[in-house]
Length: 319
Image 1 (cartoon, rainbow, N blue to C red):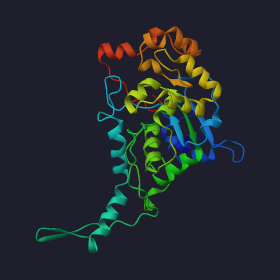
Image 2 (spheres, one colour):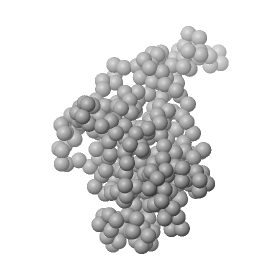
Image 3 (cartoon, rainbow, N blue to C red):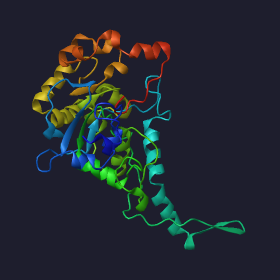
Image 4 (cartoon, rainbow, N blue to C red):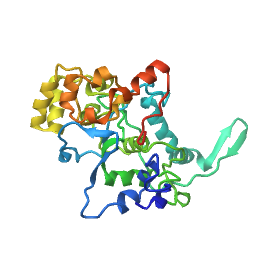
């Protein structure tokens, strides 16, 4: 990896890889054309798989990672307005240039009447590519804010498409100053939130909240996801399970029913957000064999955060 190309200090000395992941060249130059798959598995050092993953059952989605909760809490204090408000608000902010151009077209000659005075507005060029300004509902109808990047499956094509259509001014690897963009990002955001917002804004194919929860848990297990984003019948759950886990997965899913939680395909640092009473049960350890090797109960951050009121950095990728 050419770390200088992605503004990293070195290949072995960086905290957050967002600068590389938000660079369009990363998704093209770091892979062999015709050899490497378009679908990649992103798995950080504090992520692990619990049971079988068939990547072919996820090739229809642009991105899948663990689902974020609706509201901020002591365990997840940022963003304070909650993801359901944060994500569409960011999309509105990032697509401001196109909104300004559209407003400009509605005002003849680009002049706004203000009482007796007239104020000329600075003209905005028409974006080279116009985007759909309507951000889809992400917290109703079974949809949820997806998703955490620490354990995720991604389409490289869609990663590059997101950056091309809504590049970060500093990290994209594109000369954005010479481009008339409908969408551009100025602030610093974790790459998983960036992709979650832009892909939703581009109407990319994303999984339902329950499907994402079947893939990975960080803050929320599947039962918590359905309580937030819409309950499902047993038949609907099994239909989703068969689609994402296969027929053998339906049998496994049925075995887990009656337990406190359904164990997804994998997890990303769940000990930040769940107590040992959840993670150290016989059923949990039985269905996730590697969990006991990933952390010791005394290393859990859950109790510290609740008992001492410590804040944790928002759990984007790299945290």
